[in-house]
Length: 213
Image (cartoon, rainbow, N blue to C red; front, side, top):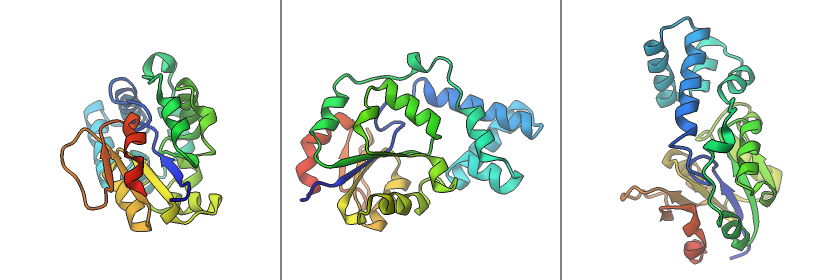
């Protein structure tokens, strides 16, 4: 196999966002909805979850139904004064990434300023040839295929030359439909027909590399 383009999701793929970061983002989004749509906290939280489930991102629901400015939303919901204490770094992650042959990109539904800050705190920001954030997808987050196609065009790669490493099954479904090889990062015991390889942790990636040929 020629050296592929490795495409990595960020949150819950390259680091564990569940304990600290996701609860903070969820609170921030609820507060934003509460303030800008004049709702009480319970109604705002319900709407946040509803839009996330229906559209794949709360931002998408707010844009479609309320004309929300995505830049304004992303800026106000991704403020992290304590981010250094919230990011859980794996010391050997850099070594794992270095062992993978080929170019590497991050493809995240998060905004650029947040993605770059997390990568810097993980001490792997220099390991990637590209960071595709939600701003680069015309605010059409994964699993929409627009961002995937833009990434492929930017690197002049065919989907068959890429490996997508991701914790979200819906995003892997899009990647597989386009022709990418797929790696699901999950502790879940089930599989899916559009998952080529499943690992519990991104640190296992070198050990399954031969199965992606």
